[in-house]
Structure formats: structure tokens, C-alpha cells
Amino acid sequence: MIYLDHNATTPPHASVLDAMRAAAEQAWANPASVHRPGQRARAFLEQARGELGVLLGLPAREVVLTSGGTEANNLALWHAFAGGRAPGALVTSRLEHPSIVRAAEDLARRGIEVRWATPTEAGQIDAAAIERALAGIDRVALVTLQAVNHETGVLQPVAEVAALAHARGARLVVDAVQAAGRIDPDCWRGGDLVTVASHKMRGPKGIGALAVAPGIKLRPLLLGGEQERGVRPGTQDAALAAGFAVAARRAREGGPGRYARLAGLRDGLEAGLVSLGGELGYEVRVNGTAPRAPHVSNLSFAGWEGAALAAALDLEGVAVSSGSACSAGTARPSPVIAAMLGRERARSAVRISLGEDTTEAEVDMALSAFVRVLRRGSLNA
Ligand SMILES: Cc1ncc(COP(=O)(O)O)c(C=O)c1O
Image (tube, rainbow, N blue to C red):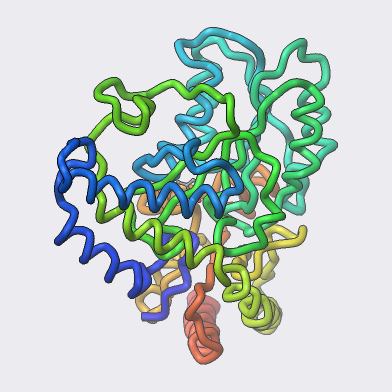
């Protein structure tokens, strides 16, 4: 199987698995226990917090370990609006991951003013869109902006939007889930609350983090013990933390370098698919023409259902996605592409995301699989 769905998740790295196995064997005690076995387990949590602090450019003691990116994003939004009180508006967009969009919709139902910034057709929430969304609001509490879009790979202008948010006295949440370990950290600096997920950077699933600037008081979504300083109660797993620590170190030591070479492979594949579409009479168009992370390509194949195309490619041994992973299985067209370019483009969209170890030979084989599938489709049409 040629796996080209690295934005859904990445395979755990061998060094991550080694660290997890060692921690699971030696540090299975409860990290909250004061005895020495407990302290041994706790050391893995602190190691992860330390690595994440460096990766995210925020103090290690302000890093909260969560169950993943979804929980980290919910926690980030919740801190400003807990209990449905209305300290100011939320500015966000339909390009964000559902863990932001659905949480924002829920806040709107609770009476919070939510403003939706309009994306450009090229796939960005630019500073002008944020300025329009901010216009006429008395008080803004929070702005959200993901660093890299999960569907298109388009880079978002984090620094510019951070300046706009801060000028209005608002805090910025940066979802760096698809950015950490893939692009230069400078591209996603500026957030007051930053979220990441371990499994997108070759760590284990079921663990993520929210890092915040000093002085930000988080509020728990769950009530329970004092773990994670009471913000995220529940017994932590030293083995997950050990794997996350290794993944975070790999991400900051050479992560972006490992991804940079993928731009050439991605561009070649994209050009091949566009010209193949031309030969076979399908219009193939790139979704997300603004500057992108090097490993992602999102394309619409006119006349095709993205979900049907992804299923046919699966049978040919190539794993890609149509829509975001959370919507996969429901064949729901990507809300991101719909917000940028309309429902028809979304319905026929397929996302291809390369990984650290993707080779030129695999990309060539994937292109051949597309040729077989699209040829069959054209005969049936
Ligand atoms: C941009 C973005 N944010 C958040 C998430 C959610 O992360 P997790 O799967 O760890 O809950 C994802 C997952 O696809 C994502 O792509």
C-alpha cells in the first residue's frame, strides 16, 4: 500500500516506539503518586512538557498535556468563554478544523458573538478578512487561526493576524497541528495559545498539547483531580508522554528539513495529474493556490465524486483522502474546500499528503494508479 494520507496521521517513528515500550515497562506507576515509581513515571511527563515548550516557543510549565489536538483546541476556546459568559466576541473561520468550528458553533448557541472571517479563493484567511470580521465589534476576546490548513496545506499569515488581534486586546489561538515538525517554527509564532497533536508528527495517538503564554488562566473542561495543575484531570500515561517527547524532539531537530524535499515530488505529481486530466477530458484543478506546506496537494476532478475516486485508488493500493479524516466514512465533502470554492469543487476533491519517507518511486506508482482509475472512469462515463 502506498500511504499518501499523512495529514490524517503519520506512522509512529521507530525511535518513538522504542521510547514508548521502555516507558510502558519501567514507568507504569501513577505519575500523581508521590513514591519513587510514581516520580519515575512523572519524569516522562516533564520531559514531554520540556520538549514541547522548546518546540512551541512557550514556557514548559505552561504546557498542558491533553488527549490530542481536538481537546487542546476545545480547551483553548473554552478558557475565554467558560460558562457561556460573554466577555467579548470570537473571530474564527470555516477553514479551521472541526474541533474549532464546532466548538465555535456551540459557543454561538450559548450566546457568544462569533464572527466568521471569509477565506480567499486561494485558501487563506488574510489580514484583510480578519480586519473585516473585527470591524464594529466593541470587545474581541479571541481570534483563531490555524498555521497550516489540514485540507490544502495553505500557510496562514499568523504573524500579521497576531498583530491585529493584539492591537484589539484579543488573544490569538494558533492551531499548529499540521505545522509542527513540517514547516519552519517562525511561520507559526505569535499565538498566545498554541495547540499540537503528537500523531501528526510521528508520535503516538491519544496525546496532544496546549501551550499558553504566561498569565493565561485555563479552565478545565473535565472536573476531577489535580493532574495538569487541575486543568486536565485524569491519570496520565507515561508511555504516551515518552513517545510524544521523542516525536517533539524529532520535529524541532530537522523536521522541516525532512519535509522540504517533498515540494518537488508534490509538484511533479500535481503537474502529472493536471495533464492526465487534460488528456482524458476531465478538468483537474488545484485547490489552494496560496503558498503551501511542501507535502500537501488538494485537487478537484470535475465529473468525479472525491469519495468514489479515493475508494477506487484504495483498491489500486493508494491511500488518499476526500474530506478531512473526521468526516471520512461519511463521504461529507470537505467544508474547507466548500468555504473556499463552493460545494461542487468540494464534492470532487481529493487530498494527497506525502510523508517524511515518501519516495519518488511511490509517487510514480501513485500516478500510474490514478491513470488506471481515471481511464476506467472515462470508459464508463
Ligand atoms: C488542523 C488540525 N487541528 C486539529 C486536529 C485534531 O487533532 P486530533 O486528531 O489529535 O484530535 C486535526 C486532525 O486532523 C487537524 O488537522
